[in-house]
Each structure stands twice: as structure tokens, then as C-alpha cells.
Image (cartoon, rainbow, N blue to C red; front, side, top):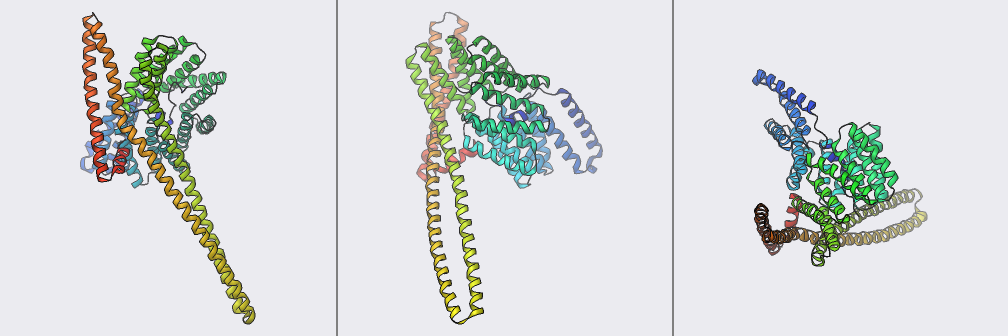
Length: 550
């Protein structure tokens, strides 16, 4: 069984998942007010430095509202971007785009979030802002991770790790190790997950960062749960909870409650499990954390199933499914359908169980395809390394043979006569031998290149098949899901004698029909676009565009 809550991603912690520090906000607003007054007083004589300082304060205010007040966070980020553009301050523009990306991601708008983070990355690369580049890679990796595209997530996390270690950024290095651990954890590769979490914990302990010390202990506790080491999980988790409560780390407190709930559920104590899961849910609702709210719904729904409270189980699992579909969380959709299929089985609703199980298989296979793509990518990376080694070895051998030929020529001139002839024969032998070796090496290199091309084609085919499935299946799943919900609501409307219930169910039914119509049109548009690209022979471009936008 998967974790009842997604793993704590370090950059999510960095991105304002804490209780808002009102004192900090008040101080920054006062600072901005005084700064603007001074700027107005100086008028045209104010140096550009005044504008860049205003940009920095606006960015800090935007960060202070992350995870707590998305409207204010967006307002400050947009003002920061506007001023930065007026004075062509690239670093300020990159920070503002990053902030907008964070806000949109926390609101579940992955499409806009990715767009903003890629804009930030482009600017940071232009000005060689390595801290910003590493941070953007983490943000982009997190979006891929939550969409279940682990190969791309790993690629971005390792890029961030390389740069962070190069510039000595300990905090970002810790984030990178933690997020790499998340990937291995999601793949049930617990030894590698533990190794990376412990590496991250060691870094955060060395810099005395309590927030992330708590976070890593929560992650470690989650792995101990999966390994069945409940005593170690409890000890590690309460250690994290104590630190999180001490510093007002709400996101950490919520995750600690979730893990405790997970442990109680594993032990069959569902009442305590629900109590802790609802504690976590209250915090995620307070901080408007859409993704984690959906995952908690799944956990609560599964717990009600085990309690045989099937009505409540169905309610929470369907809520989770709708949210997961809206934000495009593949793992959330898969877990929701899996929970619904088990619920149908317990309920004896075999027909509905088959429908939900089929959807579960589609999304499970989608995640498997992504993992296969990840393995192919890793094989290609290894192959590229091996190919370089072959090329380097060939170059070294050629240099060595050329050196030998030069030496023999010098000896030929020195000795002359018969000795020179003998050496010439030896030289010819070396030349022939070198020629033979070079032909063999070239043949090996050609075979390696052909194998690489073949691997690339296989990877491309797998990715293409996965993307076709994702693009068309998502709107169809909306249609199927809302159709099933609408059938149930229509039955309730017909059978209900309460006029208020009828009115509410009718309104929900009308809303569902609108969504079915929207998603049907969306599916038609996807097929139409794909057919057009296929006719032009540019289907790959269609998916490349989708990848950039997603």
C-alpha cells in the first residue's frame, strides 16, 4: 500500500508551507512604505538602487504570503515583476516568475506554474544566476514528480544537486537529496530513499535548520512505516512533531499527524487513525494545499472502507478523484480509483468495481510506462558515458601509436642503413597494427551509435504511447466519472422527498452535465489537433508543445 500522504518535498517546505509570520509581514510592509516615501521624495534623482531594493522587498512580501494568502502573494509578485521589467532588472524578473510559479503550483495550476518556472530558468541562465537556476530546477522537478513523470523529475533534481554542490549552497543541496529520496521512496526503493534522506538530514543538522530537520525525520518515519518498523517510526515521528510544533511549522505538523494516522491504521486502530488524519486535513484546508488535501481525502476514504462505513468512504474517495483530475495528479487519480475499486468489492458492487478497476489499471500502467521511460533514460545516460570512454580510449591509443612512430623515425635517422630498413619494417607493422585497431574501434563505435539510435527510438515510442494515453484518457475519465456521479444524483433526485435535497442535487447534476460537455469537447479538440499533426507528419511536435506547457 502506498503512503497515506505524499512525501514531504523539500522545496514545498521552502515555499511557504509554514504559518504566516505576521510580524515579518508588518515589518516588510513598513519598510516598503518608508522606502516608497523616500523614493518619491528623491524623484528623478533617485538612483536605480532604490528600484532594485523595492523589487527585493516586494519579492520578500510575496514569499511571506506563500501558502497562506495566494491573492496577496500574487499581487506582490506581479508588482515586483512590473518594476523589474521597467528597469530591466533580470534577477528581479527571475525571482518574480519563480514566485508566481510557486503560487500557481500551490493552487493546483500546474500548467501556469510550469510556464512561470521555465521563464524564470531562462532568465537565470541568461545572467548565470546559479542559485536561481538550481532553485528553478527543483521547482520544475517537483511539478514533474507530482504529475508522476519521475524520469523528468530526477533529471531536474540531479541538475539542481550538481549546481548546488558546485557553488556550496548547502540548503539547496539538502533539498536536492531530499527530493531524490522522494523519487526512490515513491518507487518503493527504500534503501536508496533512506540514503538520500539521511544525507539531507545530515546537511540540515550541520546548518542548524530546524524546519528541515523536522521534515527529514517525517520522511524517515514514513519509510520505517513501510518497512514495518513501527517503533522506530513512532520515535522518529514524535521527534519531528515536537520540533514542528515548537517552531510553528504547520505543514510539518500536518504530515506528522498523517504519518501517525498511517501507523494507527496499519495496527488496525482506525478510530485513532481517522482522528489524526482529520487533524492533518484541517491544516491543509487552512493553508489551501490542494494536492495534500486530495491525498488526505484518499487516506480518510480508505480508512472508512476498513471501518465498513461505505457511504463516507465513497464520499471522500470521489472528492479525491475530482480534485486529482482537476490538478492532473496521475498518482492521485490512480490511488482514488484503486480505493474505489476496493470499496466496490467490499460493497458487493461488482459491476462498478470492474469499471473503477479498469481505470485504476490505466493509470497504474501509465505510471509504469513513466518508470520504464526513466530506466531507458538511465540506460542511455550510461551508454553515452560508455561511448565517451570508448572514444577517449581510442584517442589515447592513437596518440600512443603516433608517439611510437615519431620515436622510430628519429631512430631511423640516427642509425640509417640496414638498421633503418629494419626499423621501417617495424614501423610498417605498427602502422598496420594501428590501422587494424582503429578499424575495430570504429566498428565498435558505429555499433554503439546504432544501438543508441535504436534505444532512442524505443524510448520515443514509449513516451509517445504514454502521452497519447494521457492526453486522451484524462478528458474521457472526467466524462466517465461525472457520468457515474450524475446517475447516482439523478436516482437521489427521483427518490428524494426533501425539496431542499432535490434542489441541491439538481444544481450539482446540472454542474456535472456542464463538465461532461466541456470535457467531451476537450477530447474532440485533442483528437482533431492530433489528426492534423499526424497528417502533416509532425505528431512529435504536438507532444513537445504539450510537454513545454504541462
